[in-house]
Image (cartoon, rainbow over all chains, first blue to last red; front, side):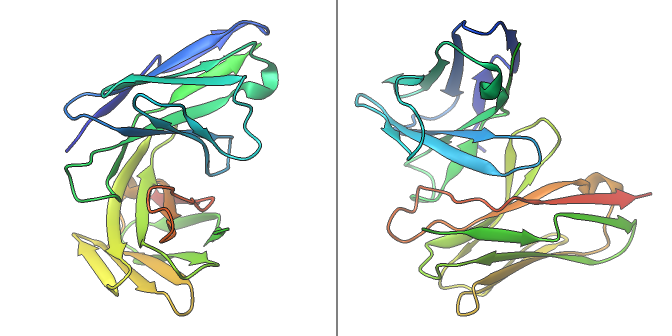
Length: 118
Length: 113
C-alpha cells in the first residue's frame, strides 16, 4: 500500500523556538494532506487541510499564524510550530489522500511526530 | 457536527477470547465508517472500511458491522492474540466532506498471553 513518512519522528525543543515537521507521500502524489494532533489518551483532532499550491484550511480554534502549513509540492507538506510552548507538546500525525486509489476515502497516515517543548 | 464515541475506553482479555469493540456516532449521514489500529507512539493503520450502503466487512479475524439507523458500528475480533494489543479507533466522515475524518477516542485493547 501507499506509504507516508514523517520527519522527524520525535523532537525536543526549548520554549520559544520554531519546529518544522515534514510529511511526505513516498509513492504517490497527494493533492491533499491533513494534519492531526493527538494528546495523550485522546483521539486525533484535525488541525488543518493542506492543499497543494493553495492556502491551508484550518479547523476552528487552530491558530493559523502559529501552525504554518506549506504544501509546495505534490509529495511534501510541512507543519511549522512557531514560538512553541509547553502546551504545544503533542503527537502530530499527517495523512495524505491518494486521488488515484479508491476515491475520496483513501487516506494514508504517517507514523507521527512526538513534539516535546521544554 | 459529527461526534464519535467509543466504548469501552480500555479492555483487557485473555488470549483466545472473542471480543467486541463499540463505536457510536451522532450523525447518520455518513460517507463510510472506518476502523483503524494505532500502536503506542505510532501512526494509524487502516483495518476495515464499510461503505454507507454496506452492513459489514470482514478481513481475516476481524469483522466490522454498521447500523446507520442506530448510529452504531462494532468491530469483532475473533480468537484474540497478544499481537492484537493496540488502540482501536473508528472514524465516521460525513457525506458533506468525506475527506474529514472525525475520530472516536479509541479503545485500548490488551490481550494477555
